[in-house]
Amino acid sequence: MSRTVWTVLGVIAAVVIAWILVDVLFSLLWFVGKLAIVAVVAVIVFFVLRGVFGGARGDRRELDR
Image (cartoon, rainbow, N blue to C red; front, side, top):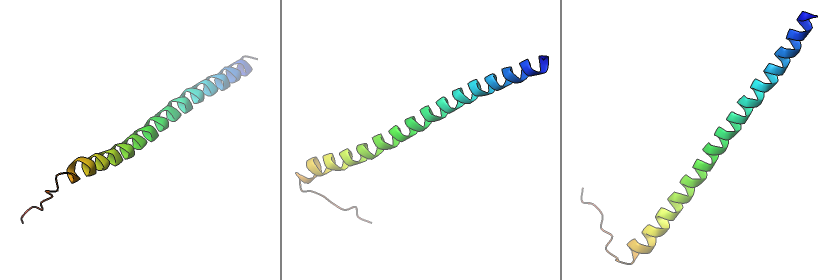
């Protein structure tokens, strides 16, 4: 009977540990996904602002090589 109790406790511990690991993994994946979306939006906003404010002056010069 002692072996059955330890088996049940082991299964419960495994489920709890798996639950925590999956929760951490999904939180990390959500953070990475949100970070990627923010990066894409920031690049779009950067180019829009550069086009709006940089294009009004009309002095786009290329660097001499």
